[in-house]
Length: 211
Image 1 (cartoon, one colour):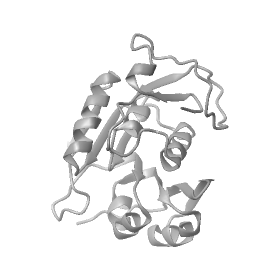
Image 2 (cartoon, one colour; image 1 turned 90 degrees about the vertical axis):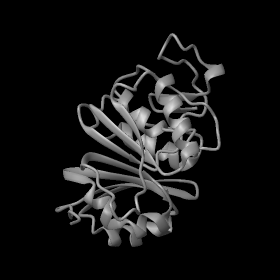
Image 3 (cartoon, helix red, strand yellow; image 1 turned 135 degrees about the vertical axis):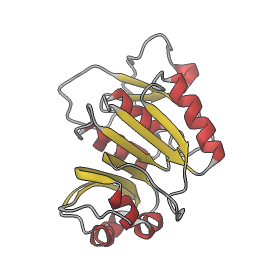
Image 4 (cartoon, rainbow, N blue to C red; image 1 turned 90 degrees about the horizontal axis):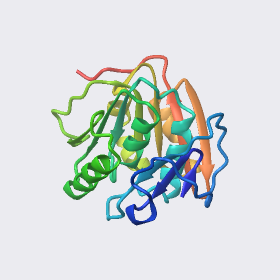
């Protein structure tokens, strides 16, 4: 499955000695001046995020339009780790991927190792809703969650966005976007829709810091 330059495939459909891919199926239109393909190998499991769901594809598409190179990235609710791996392969200096689901974390760690990005992708067991939750903010925060979770933790998610950074979120219906933008108090929004799902990049004049 291709999204712009990124090609997501299971281990048995790839050549693990080469990070480039040549499959042109299931292509989404994305503006890219660099035609070099980036292969992401994901072992299918119950962990969400193999790349084939619309919300994951939207995140992968918007991620390629973001200024990732050399920046710190957080992947909230990482699932299979596909977004964290994509960020690393697009040049992020540091990626922290976290989840509270042990099965998802096991799959994410395996996929990180399989894609040879363990040197700059850290997979951690963290609960976004925990009272003692603490994490250094990042330039780009990825949150492919649900509209309910995004609304519930809007302030905490915004606090993870560094000054001048962006929150890239998905997992909600297009009709939920206005409510989410209001909850986050975003000053700038870039959104995209794929069928019954939407994604958006939010930017803020000020990012609140939780005490």
